[in-house]
Image (cartoon, rainbow, N blue to C red; front, side):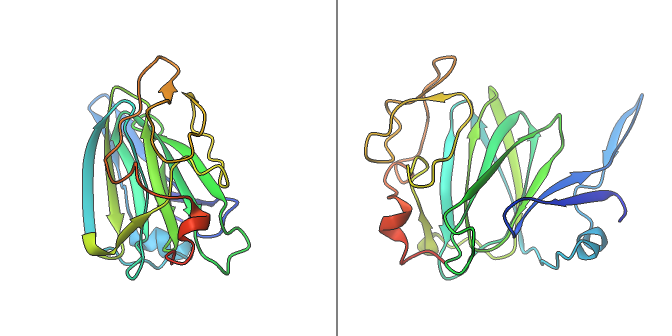
Length: 202
């Protein structure tokens, strides 16, 4: 291995990626992706699109997946901090319906690689966060689907979040510890639980 350390998580297909940061009095340099290192770790993905978003504190995006054209994603944060989550939707997987989450921030420099067949989402914990990700297939708005971020059957433990499941993905009665409300798109408020959409999952 070279500049990038790849660590398997308890769920097959999810990896924590830790690039080596070279810093001195001028600043720093880091390789955020190295195909050779990835291949040595057994990851042979090919990326076709890079994306970047900015979100304010309390924004929760997800949980998203594409049905016909599932995307593998290499995600990282270049400003701020988020709690990043993936849920296994592969019906033949021994970890189907299980989730894994980790803090990604500009300070820790961690990335997560999420293989095809997972739903993905994140919660912004800092005042603002800039989120970057590479994907293995193109975004298709007609192919996008999702599951409820608060599905009690999955049981994601979002850090610092307080509230009771209201029977839907509506976030209105949830708050962060400092009182900040959750901010979600209209679409993300409407996703149903995994058991209700299992037939659509990849």
